[in-house]
Image (cartoon, rainbow, N blue to C red; front, top):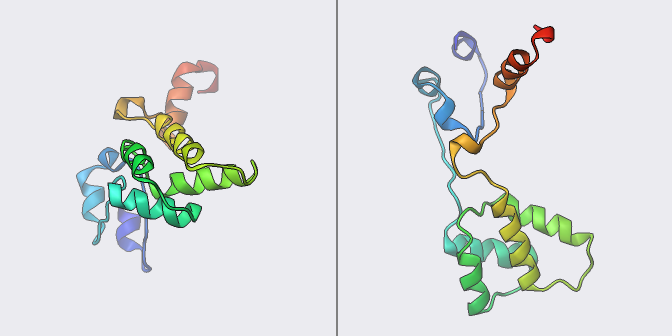
Amino acid sequence: LQQMEAFKGILIAATNRRKALDAATIRRFTFKLEFDYLTDEGKRIFFERIFKTALTDEEFVALSKLETLVPGDFRTVRQAQYYLGSDITNADRIAALKEECAVKPIEPSEVTPIGFMQIKKFKEDNPRFK
């Protein structure tokens, strides 16, 4: 925290674990932005712009059911499907987006600890590395 306060530049930080930060850390940030999952209209916009195709009403309904979509999911699917060829349908794209949503942890308890927490756990589980 002292290093954050003493830093003479612009500090930009990102996390997907904001709830794990303590209040003292959060107070040090002047601006706090939060990006939530896409709205249904946001899903349509990303789908049509990233994949350069329009959605039918039925496809839009299927896409709307995917509640945890973020912009990066569209990029990941586009990148994967680039290698698969050009005969990819919107149904294929929606199925791939559904798979992206399925691998996301929903509850904080499902998230694997990162950084020092993971090292600490490793050392606890492997006494010879203390």
